[in-house]
Image (cartoon, rainbow, N blue to C red; front, side, top):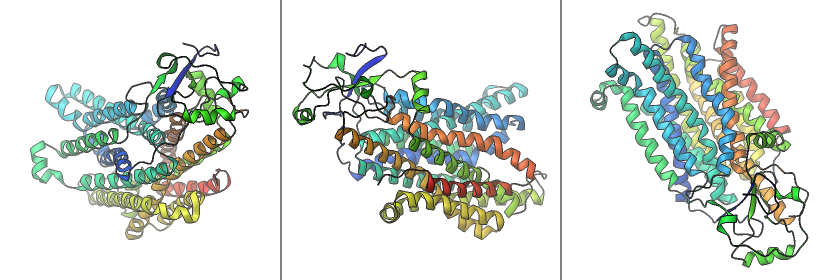
Length: 530
């Protein structure tokens, strides 16, 4: 169904929450309890991430996955996420479900996470019970486990964008900032709990003997935590759905006033103009009393228009995406190889020695200590996210962004130059500062950009605007897909660097160098709203 302007591929929608003359009203203040409920999704997601980090390598080794397939497992999910994340973000912007725009996607992705965990933690046991032929059992076990790992990673990476867009849709600007801090706090808390449970020796406990193996124990806890957290999250704040105004609203008389140019009906971000495009300031006063506000216009998003919107994003959004890519590249370079670094460099173990040799046992001990270092990182991330709220009033978002990159670059540099057990564990606290920074500051800046545009368009609705058809879902997706791109760069490039250098110490040196380059970038190129 076309709009009144007669343009093809255009639909007229209205969010039932937007009851203002120009389609935007600040949402009400949300109670702290609701924001905490909303943040439980990050707790459940990070808990399951920690379980995967602790168990996915032992699982893959136990099913006999060939080394030639390791890169396929780790690269397939981020490649799919990088390509499809903006598509899903755009689809959620235009979703007309009566349940809201974001929650249907969050529910679907959480179910995919649960299914992925079930496959990679239980697939080998199920196949062993169903298939007797050893060769067929090996092939099926590897296949099911790989599908589970890829499915879980894909869904867990994907779900961050809709969760952030959901927060931005239902919260005022102040609540967005509070919500992002709660997200970071529960992200660290969930990761710490996941690492702690993963470090326990379940095989010698009653629960482990009852459920079979430690893999089944961790699936039991992961499924329970994930289900409870996402049920709480989805019930936290009600969304208001989009509706087709042509179907849901009665015809309205055209108001008096000069029409806006047709190209001004769309703008970057989630700011849409009124359908009939009138900019008479007197209508703003009348619109506040009008029970049937002027409808919004949204173009039907196609792949071509989506790519055009991404390519033509304003420079400050593009710089924010680049800084996010630099930060995640540095962070993942260190985190994905950290336990291996502890085993080989700090403890001087050898993962390629016979499994009953002293060198291999020393390496395993280093990996265990490395897991405790990751736990310290998660606890530090939670604590720092709490203090961020106080720090931001003194040093601002620019100071927080710079500080996170600088401390991480400094810490990883010292770890690479002076690999000592105790100093390394102490410096793991700086990893948490970077983690909290990456989960909060870029999304705070996105919220600031949106707020600035909303205020500008309310004050000057008749300005000459660029048509882009983007929404908050696309903005959050464009930012979060930088995580997948960082995974692709790290997975494809660091293995080559390690093989060339002959030591994993190059990993932390690379992480330090990239983070320090990121310091310069966030200080010089990222735009901060006064």
